[in-house]
Length: 447
Ligand code: PEP
Ligand code: CO
Image (cartoon, rainbow, N blue to C red; front, side):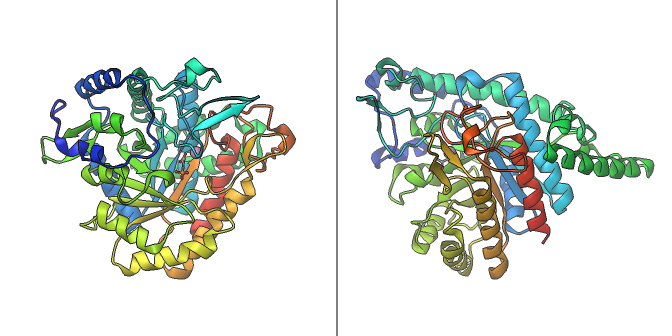
């Protein structure tokens, strides 16, 4: 990987309409920031992106399951060891549940180390008669409702790089430095087990894993695979100035890779076929995802395949369906059917979060755990009926005991939402709800 080779191919998007980009007041300041970013070292390596593409190829072929999860929006003031460890621990626990209970290899990908930019449905926000630009994520402007905070500041793109870099550094240390060793399955649960039904259920499963490991050890098998975990980073490729500044030519192959993360995805609001985001994604060789909402026509999905995966490489393209519990059974079948009939081998993944958001009477944006579960169930039913592979889940979660989504085994009620409502954007599953979900998904997958 040659860190300072830039290719015009990373910037072809500039002549096309780019939705959801900030309006920076100072174009020169932005140019300076882009030049700085172009000089920074890559956050990930092209070879790692290829490895994830291979793993996702297994998902597309029906041989593995994708677990993709993390915050809706990461925040600069939450880049702490505790918060990162808690998120990772939650994903590792979910991964252990799915691997063991569903008996399938699980590809683990965080919405982490780069998930700082948010598409918004409205460009302004009004409070008590005052109207200001909307918050677009810490990479763009400040959450605080003041005029100064809401002005987009390109310096924040550099902060995003540094926040991503320190997060990824810690993630790499945790996942390869002993913490993710399968013999730690109990340790990941320690602070949790007594207080929650899902923690207790997990503890029982961890005991079974322990027994299996002890048995293998007694037989003389102690494979290195158990000591570290493969974990990848992903985020929405929303801010194209940032993503293209971090796009480099791989010296091995001459191909372009967006080295800001292993996998990037295009959101529901930026997947226009003639738009800048699809153009940018078509130029890079990372595995890419596209969110597909209820307005997606089969022709759109087929055209996206043509643009993003013309060579039909399993693992290159992941479709993340986010229809809503009430729509997935009606709208997903035609898409899956026509995509399959076209001969394309995409990975199908269910995002049961973004189609199930509503506003509680208290004014909190929330989601019902039962709706989340029902959408996953619908997704599995559709694939079962068509004989295709339900490839994974894409969820918004945190390792902290927040009260943002209602329901779950350790039930959170609408009246509890105010207690620990901390998200800067969408409501996340807390640790207990995330584990509940993993157990239920494992049952569905086995079924
Ligand atoms: C998200 O993943 O946070 C998001 C905004 O999703 P979507 O593009 O599907 O609405
Ligand atoms: Co979200």
